[in-house]
Every structure is written in structure tokens, then in C-alpha cells.
Amino acid sequence: MDTKKLIIAILAGFAVQMGGNFLVHSVWLKDEYVSTAQLWRMPDEITSRIWAIAIAALVYVIGAALIYAKGIEDKPWLMQGLRFGILLTMIQAFYSNVIMWVVMPLPHELSVKMLIGDTVVSFLLALVLAAVYRPQFEEA
Image 1 (cartoon, rainbow, N blue to C red):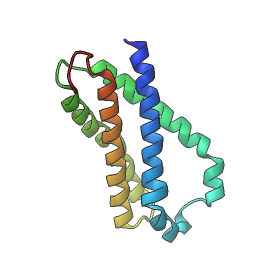
Image 2 (tube, one colour; image 1 turned 180 degrees about the vertical axis):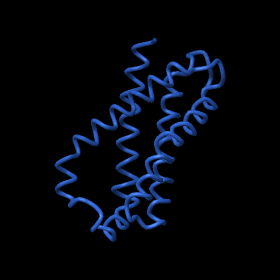
Image 3 (tube, one colour; image 1 turned 120 degrees about the vertical axis):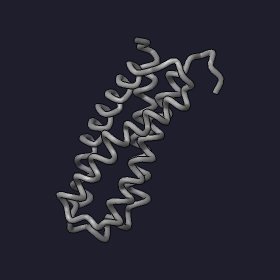
Image 4 (cartoon, rainbow, N blue to C red; image 1 turned 45 degrees about the vertical axis):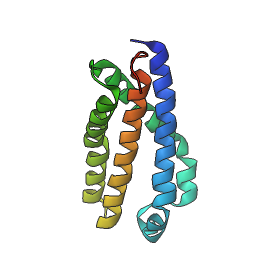
């Protein structure tokens, strides 16, 4: 396994995951979270636990990067990234958002938007991993 590519993939993937989560959950869905405030921790409680979100994102990205690195095929990197985005959506975004919708009294529209946002972030992460791991001789 190429350790240098793995480290680059983890660092880039972590930036995409944290940035994407921020844009989806702190910007795009902010007003919807405010309107359902009774379901969530207070903002200062969330802020005091942001370290846990960062650790969870790092563990997730490390796992995703390792799985991607082991599953590379001799095919175009973009198609592999899109395929991996579908898989990440299936095992993370779809699973976690459906479970949250079932166990919490989330409005249907919020659940759908959370799924859409998490799906976009999953695809971005997958494409970053694919881009990092693409062969040097392959054209973008």
C-alpha cells in the first residue's frame, strides 16, 4: 500500500468530510434545525463536543480510504470514484439517515434534505479518494 497516497487521501478526505458536513448541516439546514430545536442539543453543548465529530469523521475517512485503496481496479478513476460514492451512500448516508428518521421525530422534509446533503458529501469524498489514487500516467 502506498503510504504517501494514503496519508494524502486521509488529509484531503478529512477536509472534504468536515467542510461538507459544515456546509450541509451548519449552513444549508441551519434554519430547519432551528425550527426543530426541541430535538437537538443546545448549540453550546454541540460546540463543546465538536472534537467527537472530528474524531468520528477522521475514523470514517480512514476507513473509507483504506477500503478504497484495497478495492482499486484497473479502470478509469472517475468511474471508480462514482461507484465508490454509491457504496458510501449506501453504507453511511442512507443507513444513518433512515435510522434517524425512524427513531427520532424528524420532519420528513428534513430527513430527505439530510440524506441529499450526506449523499453529496459521500460522492465528494469518494471522488477525492479516487483522484488521489488515480495512476500518475492516467489523464484527468
